[in-house]
Structure formats: C-alpha cells, structure tokens
Length: 232
Image (tube, helix red, strand yellow):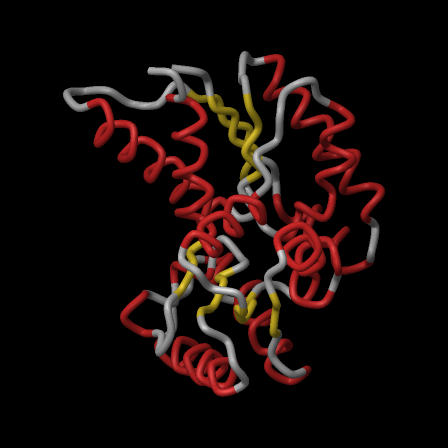
C-alpha cells in the first residue's frame, strides 16, 4: 500500500470526511482491520479564506506549496488536495513537489464520462463556478459541457458554503435553496450535477436531487485509495 498525503483544512469539516471515506474504502477493499497509510497536513483556513476573497492567490500558493512540501517530506507518495477551489493553485503546488497530485476535476470527469453523461451543472464557490481553472478543465480536457447557476444563485451557493457549511452548520432552508438551483440547472439541460465544493455533500444528498449527483469528495477519496492499492 502506498502512502496517501492529504493536504486539508479547507475546511476541516470536509477533510474529516476524506479521512473517514479513505479508511472505510481501504477496509472494504482489504478487509479485517486494514486502514489507510496516510499523512495529513491541515492548514488554518481563516488566513487562506481572507487571501481568497482579496485575490491574494500568490500568497495562498506560497502557503499551500510549503504545506505540500511538508506532506511529501513526511513520506507521502501522492498528494490529495482536499478542496475543489484551491485546485486553482494546482500548477504552483505541483512545481513545489516531486510526487503526483491527484486532480479532483480529473477524478470527477472520469466518473462523469464513465456514466455516459456529457452535460453537467456545477455548484461550488464563486471561484470554482466562475473561473476557468475548473470549468475549463472539464470542457477542454474531458469534453464535458458545464452549466452554472445565474449570478444571484451563485451568490447564494457561495454564501452558504462559507457562512454555514465551513462552520459545520447544516440548514434545511439552505438545502431547499440548493435543490431549487439544481432543478433550474436540470431544466436547462444538465443531466447531472457536480458538487464541486467538498462541503456541499454535507448538505445535499443523492435523495435530495432531481438529477444524479457527482460527489467530488467521495470520488476523490475513492481515486486516492485506487492509486494507493494499485498492483496489490
């Protein structure tokens, strides 16, 4: 079993889910009392969140590159960045390490294509929904058409993530708002919806959605285990 490196804390709410899912999947695959060999570096999210919202991506890249180097030095053979939004900085992080980074958008795209789906809706932070680092990767590398909510709906999705989900607050009214937004994406032609923020699966469950969901947290965790167990 190869050692998985988790770079998390963005937020720790979803990083805890990564840890649980990876270990559950290893136990399912190997049985008995097996668990994952992994190292975890969890950052303080507050200063990084401030950097995000003032557009200091250079400073954020410096923090995450240093943390990723620490994960590698601790013995990780692969890096799993436990966040969708900060994959904006994947190129800078990859330059700082000598181990592969398992890109969350590529992991999601693999399952989307395997399901025979060509058009998806995307929910995430405003950075993920509006910028090209994520949408563009799905379109250009994987040929997947991506629909996003309108401006007012994007503001709602973003606010709920930062003000509620990252603080561990799960509200039924926010779930209802998300479901309404997903229904709108489905009406525009989305065959499924990508939960492109690792906190959203804490709120929206498969039974809540009128169309299939792709839970990027679960997908990314599964891919990490597949990588760790390749050849066993």
